[in-house]
Length: 374
Image (cartoon, rainbow, N blue to C red; front, side, top):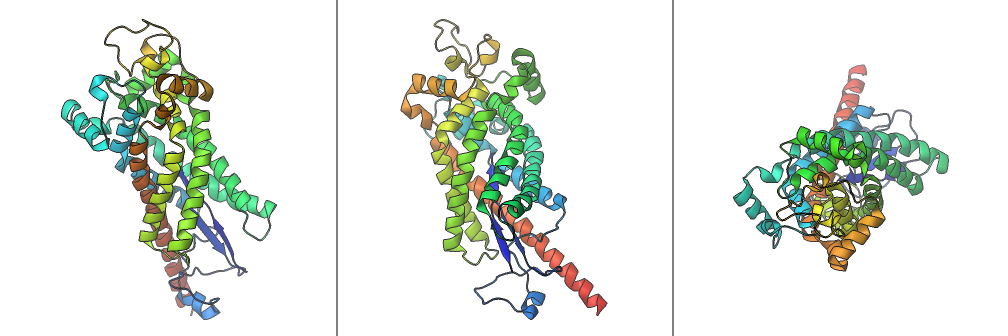
């Protein structure tokens, strides 16, 4: 009797993964479903590769490697768009940082601040994304089977999958949140930091270690609905485009991109609040204190202008609404969608490719071993 479990995660970056089919045979052979077919015979299972997922018992390092590579590629390739998104979410941008759209923003940034400015802070994101995504997949794959056996022994349990994904997201965001804080501080217009170490040291001295986790609860609040909507949309589109769950890169790209776009648009208000908590934009922090900032004060230097900080999702929501009304909650939505569409497409494509290659390689090794025994 076969069992199939579908779930995974994008982050934010994390994404949702498609995982394992387990047969009742102790020594099962993976089967690639190249087309719709009746229940495979013993002979068929000996000659085909099952792409549905990584075989049970695959080393934790396999999941960690696939997740780490996918996470690093996703964040690095789309980093310039992420920089634009951060700036477009500014509540009170300076005259030099007001952009009509994403392409206009990129052109202005490169022209006025240099060609390397859109990728400033990329190194800290790459350092954070690797272990964060690796830990997510390791945690998720371990918890998924354990919880399924408790909740619904011998069968698939979406509740268990969801719980495993949520618990893995908590660990993922715990690693990524400090990297997000540093990255977004360095992405802001007129950022005063010379580099990553200078930014980390300045935040630690002026605001304390708690500043690196000021947006942690908001990040989790955003990622739970994001991942739920992302997962449901992706699975629905896969049922339409790839009902037999074969390795089909185009279906992974299209489903991942559309799922990411829908989830990104729906959770933009929370992302705006997260950006405010991370950057502590000076004009927003001191909005209630007339004259607190002198002429020419930089938007990105809130930490240097006083001891007051915006903390908590509730205060962030009130500040965003007070400074821009309801429309402010969707600042940068275009950039966020443009960022998330290829990001989720890259995440799914890379992870599914690694899964396919690893499964195929294990099948070939097993086939070679059996031929040797004969």
